[in-house]
Length: 622
Image: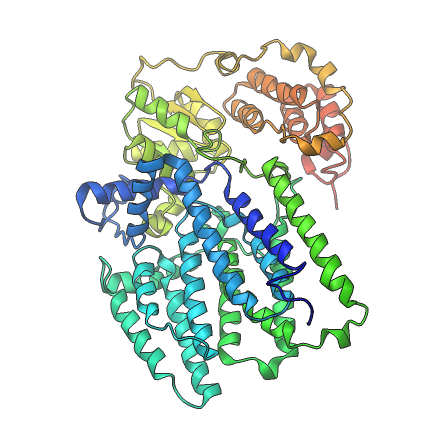
């Protein structure tokens, strides 16, 4: 596909817009609990001047081996936190992601086709969900540098193979995906023999040096073999995929009810079709390493949503080469040069800028029904930060039972030993199955009898059965916020006051008599869309929705009603989620007229929902 160079002219504008969008994707307040165990591990390493060998964070599996290949990343993370707090952590990872995409752009622009600009923009969009404070972000950069060196060697342009061992040494001590570098070296090595008629001796030598240097990790051979043990343990059971969204297959992904389907997955799916179609149509020109990379990284992307960026970052240049060698003008004569060189890049740049603005105003995140919110620092409405503060303020340091997501943050901010956390390879399938079974009715009682805890600290939205069961077992609710609840057993710190009637409402300055005006609030006509709304941040009050649901799960039905009504009143009935949950509450209480009123507002959005159809007296969907 010929046209103006992607380095200059109109096609440069969408590329610049994509760089800006990549930065904006990373500019959201930290809401990822996994950061907790990285900071906990980094602090432990600095305090003990050693790396952990067995689990140091839980009381359930202290004998389980812990191969912490991310130790260097974690130490740097703690030092960064001490220097500039959570904001510096976010900014540093934005810089790393931009560097990774700059390397991708370097690899793409060498193809000399405007398709490179289009593919670069697609890569940014497809990676949207993974712009986080995680060790995979520096891994993007290491993967890109490795492939850039190998591609330049294959093209006989430059020879920087001596850097491969250095990159692998850094990679093996900071992130578990270092084996991707060896996979790429292997593919290029065999490709040199198949297409060049001889083995690349220098690449073989540098690969062996890289392999030897990879043993210079704190766990020696165990560290080198860890990725294979990890992939084997996670692939041996489907329970992880069921419980952790990032391990789900992107081709069978189902969004939350009422949520937009993620554009990132659509772009990924479109890229997959374009890549393999272009490679098939130019099959005679494709080299072994291109097919191997495409199939290998595609398989990784199918295995888990979290691997989508690896696929795009590795294979976008392959797609650019294949597209550039295909006679598009012959097949698509309607695609005029002027339209392609000017109209398409202008529209693409405007689309990317519009997406960036929707990120700044949070409309992008609200439409996807995720808790990301634009800004820097910590999002306390998405993490159990308040619960940890309450535990520390009241010296509640007993044995805890927690949910999977909360464990990471409890280890970091509370400091006590937890029931389990998100390091699935360390927890093991046996403990995870115990945790999974406990989420069924009666599970909290069985778990409490077995482990004899002093307190439960968890997110009821993740395990509603615990919230419904514990009050009937005599456990006292002492804390509730938009994320977490804390229950104490009878006889443990009885001086800590139980949460009283209307405490959650009064603490937030809400009107406890709001329920008296329920019908008037529910019957108010919602405002129509206005252009002015595009220029203001989204007013979606996620904390009120969470508090309403959590209060209802804990049996605080009147308080729950107030939170839902406050959310409807504050947003003038703009969001159906509040009506739906309030309708379920009214139906549970037998207030059928109000339940019907709520569900009528939800019907255009969820016409097939079983609960809605039952309340409205409609026949079930076939």
